[in-house]
Amino acid sequence: MKTIGLLGGMSWESSAEYYRLVNSRVRDALGGYHSARVVLYSVDFAEIEAMQSAGDWAAAGQVLSAAASALEAAGADVIVLCTNTMHKVAPALQVAVPFLHLGDTTAAAVRAAGVSRVGLLGTAFTMSQPFYRERLAAHGLSVVVPSDVDRELVHRVIYDELVQGVVRLSSREAYRGVISRLVEAGAEGVIYGCTEIELLVDRSDSPVPAFPTTRLHAEAAVDWALGLRELPPAPA
Image 1: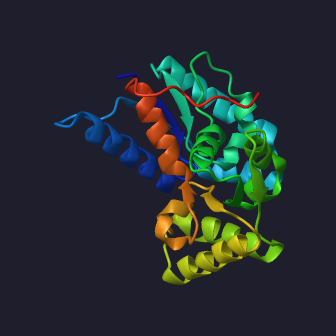
Image 2: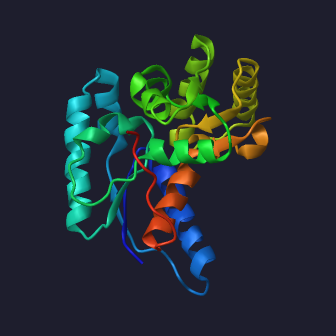
Image 3: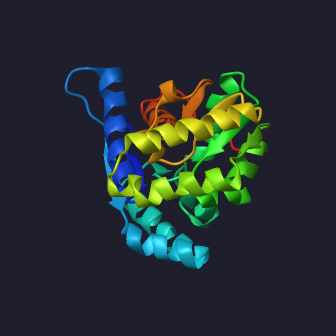
């Protein structure tokens, strides 16, 4: 079993879910008392969020690059960045070991399901900026994002509720409405493109196939660590 390096803390609520999913996958694959070989580096999200709000992505990239290097030095065989939004600075992470890009694992799952036009939920950064949508498009996917009003709702629930451990039924119902409107706009599937979203909704909340990025990312990392599959290819 290879060692998985989890670069988390953005937020710690979702990083805890990554840790749970990684170990559950190992237990299911190997049985007995097996658990995952994991190295975790958890940043202070308040510092990262301030950089996001200020648009200082270069500084955020420097922080995460240093963290990724620390994981590599600690023995990680693969780096897993436990956040969709901060994949905006993924090119800044300079490590010798493989980097498992969340967009690639998600695109592979979407394509395997036979879906080509997919709705995207996430933070305002993920939904509005091109870094994530273009990564998916490079895999041959057409991406639909919510309206301005729905994007504001989705983002607010993530930052004001989910990253703080608050899960409300009213917000789940609101997300279901956003998902329905994405389907009306032609989405054949919906990507839960923020690691906290899976704390609020699951596949049963979507009338079309849903793609929970946290689970897909964690499972791909474990399967690679156990030699069960290769890392998904980056777009050409």
